[in-house]
Amino acid sequence: MHSAIRATLLFLGPLYALVPQAQAYELYRDEGTHLNADLTVVYGLLSSKHNYIGRSGSFRWQEGFAKYGFSGETDRIGAGSVYGSLALISSATWGDGDPGGYSIGKERRTSFEDAYIGWRSGSLLPALGQDGIDVSFGRQPIKIGRGFLINDDAANPGRGMGLEYDRGGAYYLGARHSFANTAVLRLGGKEGLHGSAMWIKSKNPALSKTEMALATLEYTAAEGTVGMTHIRGLNVDKQFTDAKTIERKDIKMYGLWGEGNAGIPNAKFGFDVALQDKKSGNEVAWSAQAGYTFADFPWKPEISYRYSYYPKNWDGFFTGGYLDDGWTLGEVAGNYVRGSFASNLAVHAISLRARPYENLTVGALFYNYRTVANRAVLNADANAVEVYLDWAVTRHISVSPLFGLYKPRKDQGNGGSQSSSSTNVYTQLVLSANF
Image (tube, rainbow, N blue to C red; front, side, top):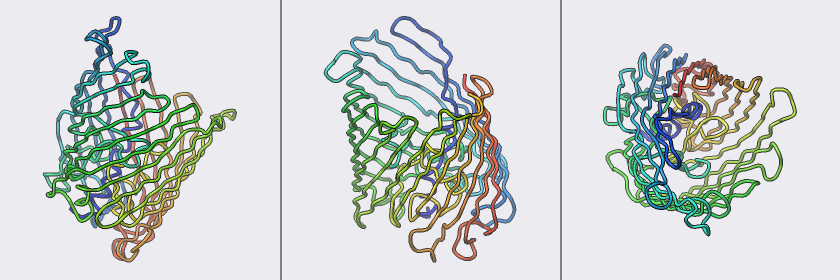
């Protein structure tokens, strides 16, 4: 698979963060034990005036998924508490498929998503704090720090990349997040000094079925959290690698990050710095963000700015996310444009949000993309603007429309990615429900 395609996939699955997390239907509860039935259903209608696979005409397609299963916890099995989840996902894409060519509109799949069990120590070891030991195994999502290096296993290509890469459609919605195999040990709870050690294996062909070991050390106080991460690549499936991802087998990564308000009410700060030590040489990527909420103003407006820098040979690894809370670089650029991804790119991003009502958020985002090197090979320079609503219609149902404009400097005829250098008009309407 072409390295540009693989790198673009690192930003898949952005909208899932918008979906209200399941309130769950309580099947059983008594003192110390509960069992829930969980259901999330999401459906999206999407369109793009231009595409990124050299075809003429616009694209219109639909995506959907349902995640359903059970979760629970009990403290009646010895000391501490046992918890776990078992869930499946059914997903599909209809219509033309997406404009990046990752799905073709014929994807359908039902598969296990979550299947894990864990144990928390509760108050058993006071010296380590509440739940000072947390051990879990199985299929589960894993996020490290702010998600700059690992934010779940969320690449969800379809048949457009070949049958061997198909994860069942819903490319944009990105329903599937869980790593196939994990063993996780967390120590120290969630306050003060705490850390973790993990073994993680992906079975996602789009991410080279990477296997890794990692450790984290964090400190959390009222002002925020700072943390360090060390990742060691253990193995990859060579069938699904390219010149960049083949180096994951022995890669070493070191990350330093932080987030919080630094003691300033209504402020939000965040930063990430990461080093990749691999055979072809060392690479350093970084990002910094600052924001403020005007809590005393009508609608409580928020403004934030983020700058992200990825050098030419950076491996985006398992990064991902959405809007202010993640690493997707815009709906069009971060999902469909081959070249606007976590490599050889510098991005300025401004976000404006307000809440006219408790159940309604309105927002706008502005992006400026600049290619760091080798513009003659692939020029990702562009500007984009997006406006959106997040409307919680009821406790269980939400509606999220978005309208975006994306203007690249170059088209495919002279070193760019888009079929035309004119402005792309992108729209989507996503409906979600949790029960």
